[in-house]
Image 1: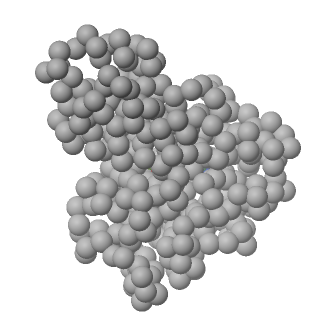
Image 2: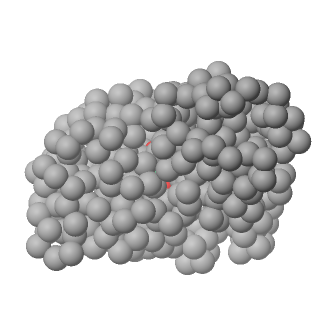
Length: 325
Ligand code: TXA
Ligand code: MG
């Protein structure tokens, strides 16, 4: 099945039917492309896990079309969940809530919570509305690899046997912020471009980061190496990067990839990508840049460390995981 451009409701209806039949459909969201299946179908979930090469105890996010559907999946929903949902959905925020008894272990990883989100992408919303139930969708990449932000990236991961709905390049570019509200408190399990500060402003309470050593929900944030290209990644400050670069011979320079904030006057090479000074624009293009440089047969990728401020937190988190050996 080639990449499908969902310009007609007919294509959406066919994709929804494919989900009903237990098939997998890769779908665009505003964050990254997801690999979707019927979240109530154990066989479809088994295929999903096998396709991704993902450990069975690793939970997946259920994507829904409306806030009303929250109570199909979650119970004992605290008010704070509705406050955040109202403020940020559809959008790049996943809420962790106490699951209803029927929610499959394959969705929750055997935990008593379920992750839910309404994505902010017209194609995803059309598909979710046409399907009418929840769609389990991890990022559409092989386990541990960089998430896809275009339909072509999904085909690079899985080949063209898969149904892929093309919704253009993702505009957020990194995965959703995951917030555990199951206890009525607000704990950030995975930073995203929806910042802790924005969440705190709406919630009116401090969003605490997840503390290691406590009761440990299984999130990709707990895996050190994740979101990683195959080429080794090294993070460097601006000054260290310039200093190291200038000591290389031009032959050596040709084997290094560079990702920087700005164009350095002294650093010009086809393997140099500058992603800019703005976190939103940087995040939008980061994964495509990593994937592009990863195809060039380089010995290493050098990445300039962005500023240490809250709006860069998700980017820092992903870069650190890329660089973990
Ligand atoms: O932006 C996103 O969140 C994308 C798009 C497709 O929606 N999805 C995504 O899915 O990044 P995935 O599976 O690659 O990452 C979801 C993370 C996993 O690390 C998983 O452990 C965590 O969400 N998660 C899901 N359900 C959970 C739960 N009940 N408790 C704790 N963590 C959960
Ligand atoms: Mg993922």
